[in-house]
Length: 143
Image 1 (cartoon, helix red, strand yellow):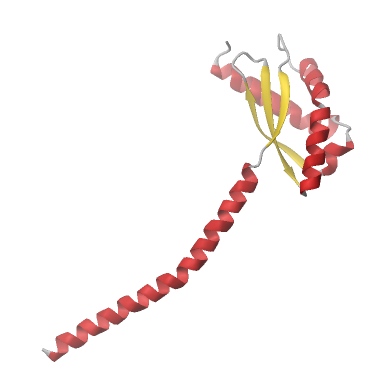
Image 2 (cartoon, one colour):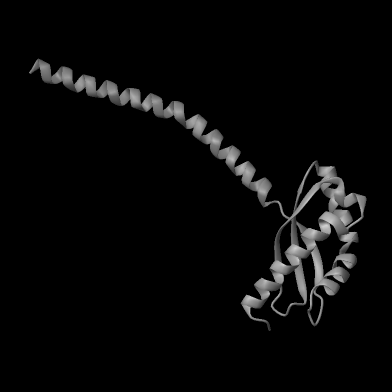
């Protein structure tokens, strides 16, 4: 079992190398259908398996096409990693789509909608609060 520091170093090296391959190495046209970036790499403790999370910008069809291209380029990516990195064994590569950016955007939109809906309610409650203060001063004048 490798140390956690070594696992992190191997993961960052894989991330860098796969990012370079996405820019220059992979010739499959399907991979170029959407803008692809590597968001995270998770390497198993024994350095035998790696999950590469990619974020794809584009339409749903372009995303599906890009994922198909990446899955077909898995053996090429593993071969290139074996040549570029000095590891005893080259890990098995799995590409997974990272949808966290999309979920984050949806959450921001929902939060903005909630705050926009809440502002009129706050203004109404402020107006009621101000009216209560005025009523209290009227009562004090009568005494």
